[in-house]
Image 1 (cartoon, rainbow, N blue to C red):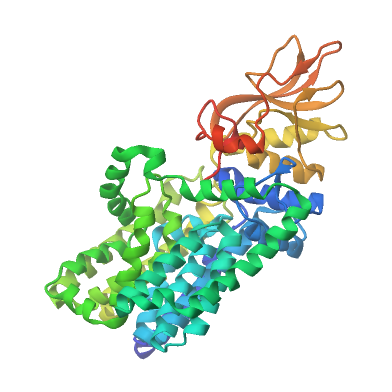
Image 2 (image 1 turned 180 degrees about the horizontal axis):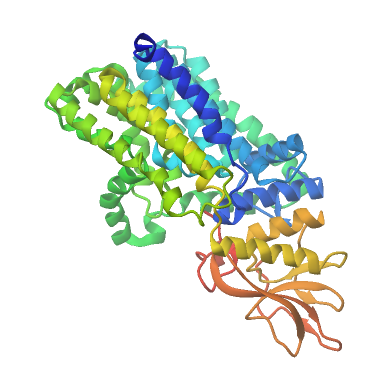
Length: 560
């Protein structure tokens, strides 16, 4: 047994086995009102199916320009594969993203830094706090984009060292095309700065103008151009609007939007904020301050490239206030490759201090499942809650003991411990719905019940949360469209600013996520006539009217 526990292969296998339940258990139970972007992706994909139109995405039946369609296509495939418009199906592509990312990290790093360190970087990336305990259970595209951009980073290093420039540019620009069709311009920006990074690393500035670089751009232009060619057939005379939206989406959160002061302040806040988001592994940053550690890391060819590629690309987000941590997933393997190297290079005394801090956190977290005993009412809906909590606690204790006993494998054991913690999280936290989320879901169900068999629209402007629209649309099997004028014998969802009891009869009043506005489900009173009191926001007005969502702005103007 001692020999088995001392074998790294045992822990790698245990990590791989535990990763599946850690990512899948209760994946679909968390309500879809938790995140605006997730419900928007789900709604756009649903409307593709309901309208049988996959090239030109829509939102509430109107053309939606803010993101290309690739991620929505993946959700569509998931809907069809599972035969239901379920939350699980919305999030299943992200499960595949995590597995694919883990595989690629190991596959691309192993020839460069060795099997053991490649496994470690894989584990650190997947179990970093933001990925493991948030984004990996939401139907968002950022892990997918992250694995594409990281693969690009590594192809430059692997193929660049071999001077296989034709394959380098063809393969990387192909990935850029996929990334563009998923999220727009960010992948193009990263390609530009990664070319600069490799030129700086090799000190060969002619590389920027290599003949195959120009050939590679065709690999990007052809599939993207073909998409827009066929898109224009569906939505004629719209390409200028599409490109305006694409540019604006990529230029948000810059100094032009936030001002110099917020940008300067963000430069100082950014590193500390993300040390928190990607904990516990960011604690290893302290290892960089060991005597001679940075110099030794810089002497390594790969780690020097990783630092240069990281530095030349990260500034895009470092100088942009309001950037979400999930945008940084492509940088994690490079960052953790450097930190893990620093961990092994530092003096034994300093490494032990790092180990004891992390081990102390493990020991403290082992007590978390005890909360089930003291909060029985909160977890009453969890079957066999005491048994599950006891199992998680026991596994945590055993792993903590192994952590202190098996010094060479401590970081690996901590990664396994985090997966066990995520499994407990799946049982006790994911099924919990906020009171507001429960109310929103109940309101959507009430709308479905009241309007069954009758026409239903949203009276512009829409403050209706995309999760409400998604819930109603999938139940009714039709797109919930926006209208400017109220007509008799038709149900409408309107906001409180448009509601007039002398014009409408209200069947239901309810709240919504993202705003303090109250919504009403109404019908026009006999003899009454109502136009929307606020001019409908046309998609072509987006660039001049775009404002961040707050208490007074409709949901249709928000996009992260």
